[in-house]
Length: 215
Image (cartoon, rainbow, N blue to C red; front, side):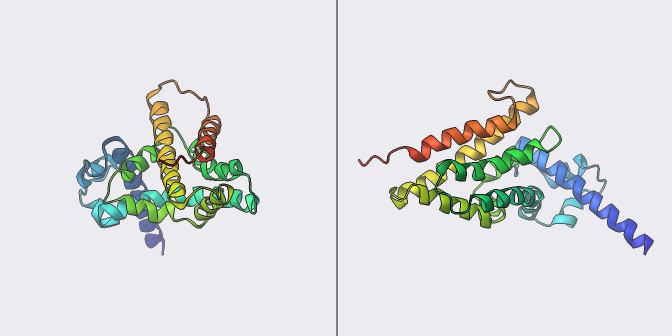
């Protein structure tokens, strides 16, 4: 029993080391520019086949990295969504959308890598669906999008879909750019993650309240 427990601890430690190394390397270089051998070496694994042994395909590895973070983000988001139930205040729903990701990153040891990792994955057609399945399809997120739609019922469906996409793009790249700046020691417009979230919420409020001009 003790031997099995010790082995389980070693396996868990190895998997965590691989996930941490892969997240950093993917964030810095892109998913397909990084080999399993490079990940194994960065994780301190002598066996270059360790990544494939523990995680299988690259898509499976991306999924595992995403799940490391989305569980906590979903927990934060679900609590906010419960409190916002029935609200017709657009800003309240945008708070639910934005703040959980910022709060999650604020709670991690610096430097963080997940925002830049997510930005890399979302630009890759082959892996975008993996990220969507693990994060964009979360139940609380769907409730938030429905809440935003209820606040602007006059917008045509195609305009709402367009602004959903704009919102996703802004969130992905604004968070990633802030994370990069912090890692490099570059000055940022907002001193804290909480204040940066407020700035993005302000911008998204303007986006969603803008008129829909017909050509």
